[in-house]
Image 1 (cartoon, rainbow, N blue to C red):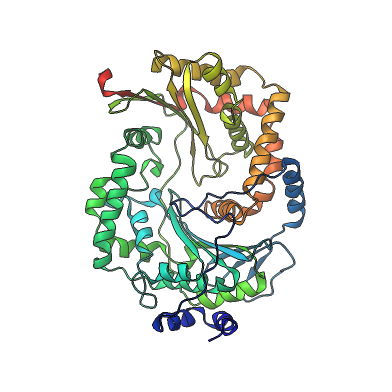
Image 2 (image 1 turned 90 degrees about the vertical axis):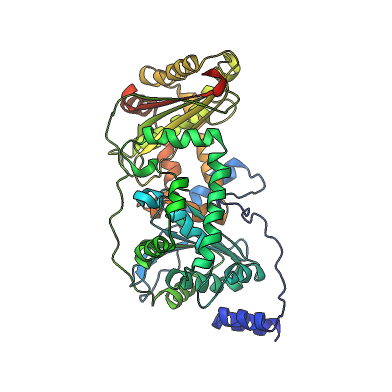
Length: 502
């Protein structure tokens, strides 16, 4: 069979031709590595590109904002394919978002199931992550580990990721083999075989993963426990990987129940970015996913916090070499804030505090006063529920955790009383926006952001408006939200000390 025949047959029935090749032990030409293909780690969010001129990227963003307009259609109706992004919903509830990017002959598909560790309860904590592992074990159509073998044989890159709010599966293929990705993904959405012979070794893999990442890592273990006081009412306190006692209790039937409960097209968003024709791609999606029936969905767990629950502090002695300080304020996300500007302002404060080598905490507490040796600030504005504004720091030698905390708090209190200098604020906003635009330059960055917004209940069209929103943040916004959120009643603190300090 010639390569041309292979390509023609692949378009008609990709999986059939693949199975023919395997039966005859034929080898296909492998495609080389693509520039910027995602690293084969647990997170698919990593991408790498050569540096670009920031001004060029900003111009590109403005152009994209003018061109990218989404249209709502059904799979059976005519789509507006003159736009860069097309959205459709199949009759079974599967949401499909397709974005064209013709710079390279590759296509990335991501399917986002709206279920994660925050939806778990009782003795099955970690079941979402365990099921993610089992999703690669096969169906009747593609048994055993053929899913992975097929993907590799056709130049594909595959992986998955479980979070608090969602479970994501991605496949990256040369464009001519992209139908294979759709067929494989649709097959395991509806026909997954969950067998005891696969479950027993895989649950041991997950247990070992927990040992390495958490149980044998004192800092990660301490932070896991810290989240139980930082999120006293929200299910975000639950670890994605589950607790070891939970993993010992999970049975195969728990996975089957979870799969039946949540893995349905009306609980999924399919994001496709790459060198595709949207109209033709919608037809292919309908072909492979359209016949999968939808099911009633259970109610999701609460991910909201009460306001101003009171100051909480945890002190722990563990086998760490140096003390560690964690401070976390309960804050709102873009999804839960009454005023969306709060989330944008919190994001800019995060960048002001720890957005580079010249950021406030690095400059003042690390280099100038030498109170700290390292600092990290994090905040997720795109959460489904309420979020945390987290500062983690390591005090300098002979500096107590109490002194470190006092100095960090003093820097946070400045936002309540002083307006940030306009020049400083404008510089931080420009740097943040340029990094935001740069992160969307490759198909992985686009797909990740589109999917994350959509699965968390935020309009994905916001993606192209985010630079404008962040640029509107003022010094007055920062002062206002600092007085709302950075108060003692919203604060949780962890003092992690070496065991010798007891």
